[in-house]
Length: 227
Image 1 (cartoon, rainbow, N blue to C red):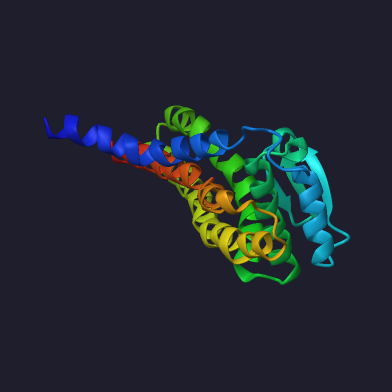
Image 2: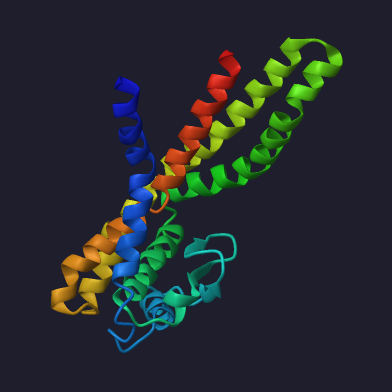
């Protein structure tokens, strides 16, 4: 009975943040003509105001993000060309990351390093997890399979580390960079400011659901290792 009560709580903790983030972002996509300029235009304006003329603003299919390697603010199509409160606020958030990069903000540098390390490790770990059972059967040495499972387990943990390093970077981009810029340049309509704060919180929490899912994967493979 206790497991039946605990399961919905765990599922809510794992999936709740992601659902909330999507609902907040979607809610303020309408009306799409809320502001006179697009998200891309605002991003360009804010970057130029900060002297970051070399940072480009691009449309992407991969979700809103700032690429510190290519020095590019990339916005999803709806935010790149949209004039909604969501488009404006998300654009300011991503410019916040560009400012962090320009100022050598340590948590952003740590995240960039970890992402570069984690990607190849995740591919190796995924391969290890797939072939571990077969290696164990072919060699008839269960310990080899266990070692490979452990390697895959540790590799999955790297993505969680990346997401944990991401959190302070995201909140700083929202509330130490984006919101002050929006206020300083009088971008927001007065009635939109509290809603913009919700959007900036949602933007900062975008990676929380991914982090929680990483923890879920770790727990799942830990259960396999203990069998």
